[in-house]
Amino acid sequence: MVFAKVFSPKSIIVNLESEDKDELFEEMVQVIHSENPEIGREEALSVLHAREAQMSTGIMHSVAVPHGVCASVKGCVGAIGISRKGIDYDALDGAPVNLVFMLLCGPDNNNLLLEILKGLAIVLQDPLFVTKLFEKTSAQEVFDALCDAEAL
Picture 1: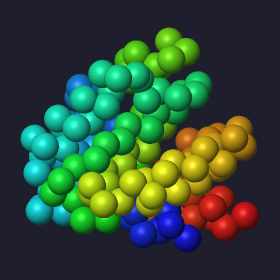
Picture 2: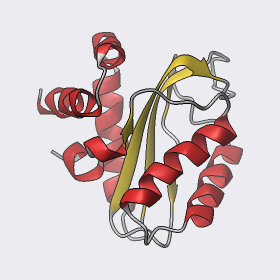
Picture 3: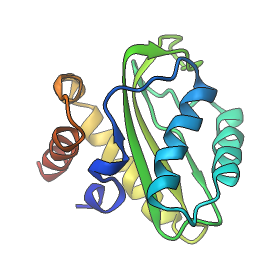
């Protein structure tokens, strides 16, 4: 159950306010920083933007997984955001993003990052999973649905 170690209900935003990628990164990094004050906000934003400059992490229709390696992170931490109106993200398919899984991992945790990304790829293959998440109205419901999907 790696998702439960990385995400928590406190790091889930069920109604993102952001309209573009820069605002989104600010909004979600703030949630991560609030729960983990030892993580440098500017450092986190810098690594996320650097990774994004290589190639968009808008990986599938309406879903993005921005991620990066951040020296001030111990292990891996994450946040989940749901946008009801969609975010201009420069996704690979050109469509707005509605569901975001943000991950920050320490430099010694590449294997854990790959394990989390693989787990997300598996659960996101089920189109009903994405639909289920959009139906959730609380952070706890999103967290529970994610953990349930990982257990299958």
